[in-house]
Length: 72
Image 1 (tube, one colour):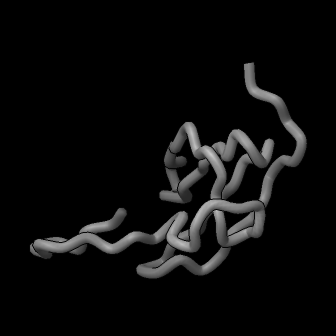
Image 2 (cartoon, one colour; image 1 turned 120 degrees about the horizontal axis):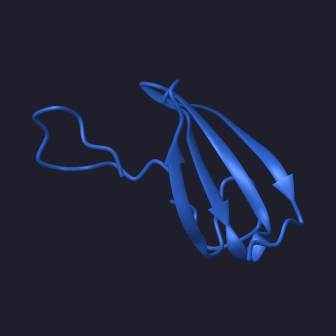
Image 3 (cartoon, one colour; image 1 turned 45 degrees about the vertical axis):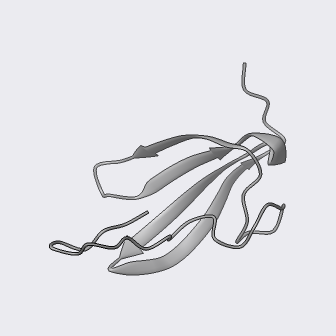
C-alpha cells in the first residue's frame, strides 16, 4: 500500500493481480525491505523468488532477482 501525503485513502501498488506466478502476481509474500535508493524488495515464498520493485512516483520496473531459492 502507498498513501500520498495528506491522503485518506491508500493505493495497492504490489500484489493487486491475485495470487499466482506471473511477474505481476505474488504467492505467499513473506518479507519486504527497502534499500537506500528506495527500491522495494519482496520475498515470494511459494514462487521461490525475490523481487525488486523500482518506484518513481509510480511503479516503473519489476525485476525478478532470484528463482528457485529456498529460504530457511
